[in-house]
Length: 109
Image (cartoon, rainbow, N blue to C red; front, side, top):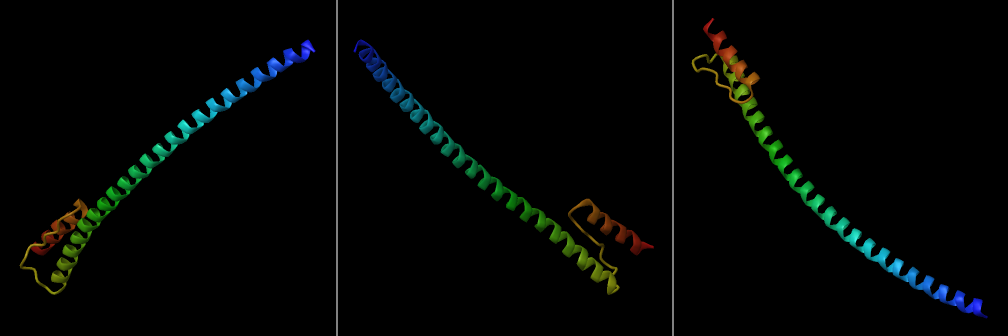
């Protein structure tokens, strides 16, 4: 019987240690889950902000390019109709401004 009593004490100690370990693991898991949720929310907010900034940038770029293309279209139509009195002015990217400069040079020839 003394062996049973010794093992009974070991079983109780083992059970107590197991409960403490499970409690510690549950606590750590809950903390990690909270951190994960917090990081996920932060990433979603940053992604949304980046998406809005991207759309704004694209809208501005399209606006600039479409304005330049409208100016270029109007200039081509004026040249086609023989209206060479006004200088051709195209704003925007350098390659489109270059076309306006080249057309202005051509009308003098």
